[in-house]
Structure formats: C-alpha cells, structure tokens
Length: 376
Image (cartoon, rainbow, N blue to C red; front, side, top):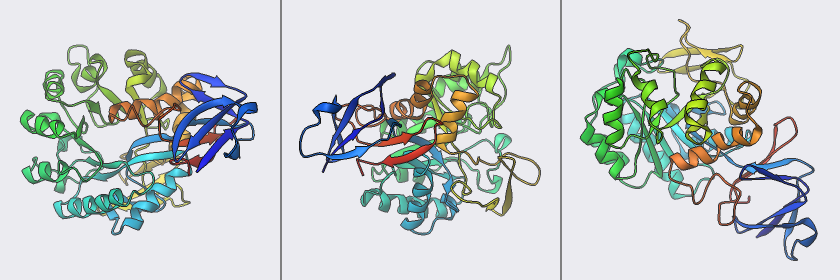
C-alpha cells in the first residue's frame, strides 16, 4: 500500500516543511516530494493544514482505557491500554508493571510475549517498575512485594521474547554483576524509587545503567554536598531521564533546570499513566489501595501521588506552555529521545526515509487529530 500525505506541515528534524508531501510505502517512509510531484499510484491523505509529527513513544504506561497492566488477564487487555493512548498520539509504548508478586510478573510477561508475537500495534515490549526498589522511596508501590533481586527474573527478561525490556530498580539494592548481566542481554536498566548516592549511581552506570525513571520523584533532593541520584543523572551526559510533565509532579522551573543541564536529547516525556486515561473514571484500585483523581492529580487517601492522569499529547503541550519550549523540541522529547534510549534510532522517532511510518497529526492547538502505526 502506498500513501501520500499532503496539505500540511511536516516536522523533519527541527524544521517544518510546507508544500511537501510525505510518501509512505508498505508502512515505511520512502521520502518527500513537492505536492505537485506526487507520483501515480499513491492514495492521498489530506492533512487539512495540520502538523504531521513522528508518533510519540512512551516508556512508562501503567494503564489506560479503564485497565491497569497489573490487572491484565488477556492479550485484549493489553490492546485496550494501547488503544486508549493511541488517541493521544502514542504509537509505541512500554506497558509498565508496577511492583507485584512473582506470579503476576510471569502472567503479565506471558501476555506481553503473546502481544509481541502477534505484532500488536503500538506494543514495543514491557517495563518492569520494581519490585527491586528501596522501600524508603516506595511511593505507591506495595511494600509487601518489594524484595531483593531474583535470578529467575534475570532469566525471564533476558529470554529475548519480550521485545524491548526496561527495568526500573534501586541501584543501591542490586549487585552490579546483575546490572551487567541484564544490560549485556539488551535489557535497559533505569534507576528509580531509590536513595542511591552519587557514587552508587556512578558505579551502576559503569555497570550499564542508562536511565532515570521519573526524575525528581521518589528520590532524595540534590544537596550541595550530597548530589545523589539526581546529581548523577544531571552530570553524566549519557544518562537519559524520563519526567512526568503534568504540572503536579515537578515544578516547571525545576524541569527547566534539568533540561538546561542535559538538553532535550537526553530528556524524555513519559506519562506514568494510570487506567483513567482515555476514560471518564475518577477512581481506581492498585494492590488494594484506592486512588482518586481530582483536579488532574491521582492520589491515595494519605495524599501520595499515584501515577498520573497524563497523556502524551498533553505532556507535549505542557512542554510548550509550561516549559517555554518550541514545539519541535517538545516533540523531540516524545520521539527521538525515547527512541535513542531504547536503541531504536534507525527505525523510530523521526520522519525520515527508511523509518517506520508511525505518525501523528496535530492541529494548531496541539490536539491529536489522527495517528498512524506503520502507515495504518
């Protein structure tokens, strides 16, 4: 199938191209041409003056469409989460399992394995957020399931049948040889829910850790003589930092400081979304704890933030409106940066020849109008 996208603004790198058609063949971007030179044999997709961007990549999606990954019992439940976020421009994601029992981890891994095997649109792999965390910074994670790293977990996530695998752990709680084993087999390791010192983070990064999960949240603040996890994340240029840009988790000025330190190429927009995204629901339950949505915040009864009600389109808008970034740089943090973190720089995150035709169309108010995964 061949499609020509026309009558819009195309974001190519950091440049907007007008009067330019995007040519897609069998789900892959062929290139561009003048709108007056579209070859014969292409179906025409009228963008109606909108902005065509690379599809958004979200590395932290706990749920959506009324479903939490922790509660998923069928591959259709995985599809429900993906469909809820696709409405907001997310064309690739890592469904995220919050700290739970080993039986739950195996069950959800089996569902992701099935989704990957059947080529479910939008599913890149899986993110295990925990259970190998520091209870002192557990947030909403169930302390009853937080535990020491298990060798069987290494076997589970390095089998090669789960797609892209991301593991969030507390580096001060996990031996460096385990981090080396994971990263040597292609698993992406990120620090989170941790009290790691600067030195402990440095050692973990030398062992292969490359990311930080929801920067600033569930970790001690950076101090003058104790830079800690945050200081390490900002100092080491190769470390990628996800952050929740909902206006509640982190003050915009604090995020601006991190972006100034690292640049947009190593900062990633994530949603940390819960099941309410894509629904009118205002309540959910996680591990027996009731979580309530009010004024855009999801909290437990004691006021602890519990994930977010954020979607990627809103995260991009907030990057423009709260962080004073140009749209093309906001989009980079939702596309190229997570693609680079996951090692997908030759296939995802850009509008360029040879890349997957994962695309999103936004209007002048940065609202999603349509999305395509491999041109569909």
